[in-house]
Amino acid sequence: MPQDPDNVYASDVDDSKNPFATHNPYAAPAEIDDIALPGDVQLATRGARFAGAFVDGLIMLPAAFGIYVVAFNLGATGVFGTNMLAAQIAGGLIGAVLASLWYLIVNGYLLSTRGQTIGKLTVGTRIVDSETNEILPLWPLFLKRWVVVQLIAVIPLFGNLFNLANILMIFRSNRKCLHDDIAGTKVIQVSK
Image (cartoon, rainbow, N blue to C red):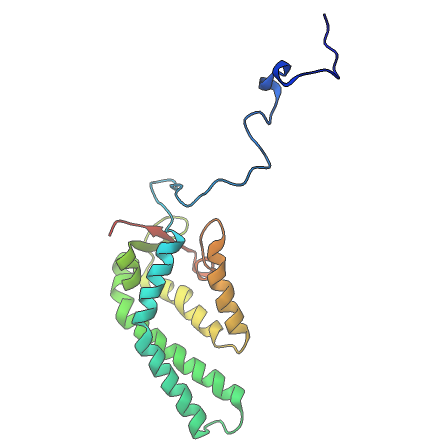
C-alpha cells in the first residue's frame, strides 16, 4: 500500500538520504583548545600565553620604572614647555627604546636559540613561524613582533586602542594576537 506523503513518521524516513541526520548545522562549534595541528604541533592555550606574558611583564618592571622616571623628568623639567603632546610622544619614544633594550638584554639569547622569552620558557611555549613551525631569526622576530608594537603604542590615544585590540585578538580560533599577525608567528606548546 502506498504511503501518504502527509502521514510520514520519523521511523519511516530513510536517514541515508538525509544530509542532516548525523550533522546538526545549528549546533555550537566544538571546543578547539586541544586539537593538535599537523606535525604534532599544538597551539599554546590562552592560559599558558597569559601566564607567560605575566611572567615577562614582571621581568619588564625595571624598564617600566625607568620609563616612568624619564617621562616624569621630561614633564617636570618643562623640556617641551607647555606642549604636553610633544612631551608625551618624546617620553613614549624614549620609553620604547629603554624597554626594547631591556627586553633584548633579558630575552635576546633565549629568543635567538629557542624562540622563547623567560616567561615562555617557564610555561612551556615557543614562538615559531606560522607556516614552517621553525624558530625565527632574532632580528626579524624582534623588529616585527616587539619594536613595531612599541612604536605604535607611543601614538597618543590610538596606541592604547591598538594595545587593547592586540590583546583581545587572542580570542579568535587561531589564538593569535595582532603582533602574531604582524610578525607572521604563532605560539605553540612545547615540553618544559
